[in-house]
Image 1 (cartoon, helix red, strand yellow):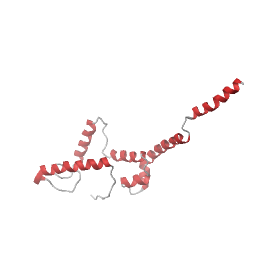
Image 2 (tube, helix red, strand yellow):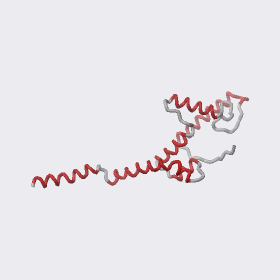
Image 3 (cartoon, rainbow, N blue to C red):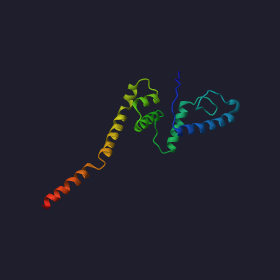
Image 4 (cartoon, rainbow, N blue to C red):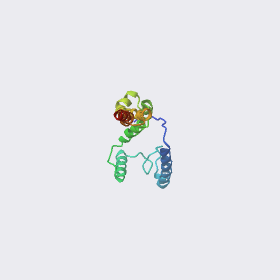
Length: 153
């Protein structure tokens, strides 16, 4: 299996979580003693070896269950992250880079619908800038007094 190494920006909460994890892992390393097998992994078993995928999924599902969240595929976290980036205004190119897609078309094909929803929300916010009052209220407040004054005459 070939892994591609790349540098990713991380939000502060993720950096803090990784620091805590590093300290916890140092404790596991000390406890395992000579049974520890160094593989240079950020996430490893309690003896330093790669985590079995089924064990990772089992732990992920038990965490979701404890939080009363419907079970999801582990890969769904990637889609959630991409959707959150888009909702925060990230460009298609920025999302492509963070996800590591080789072609922007893949990102567009997978997340284009999310951009459409985000664009609708952004466009609706233009009303707040251009017309801060609801249109019906603006029309009623400008037309009704004219109609009342004409009726009084």
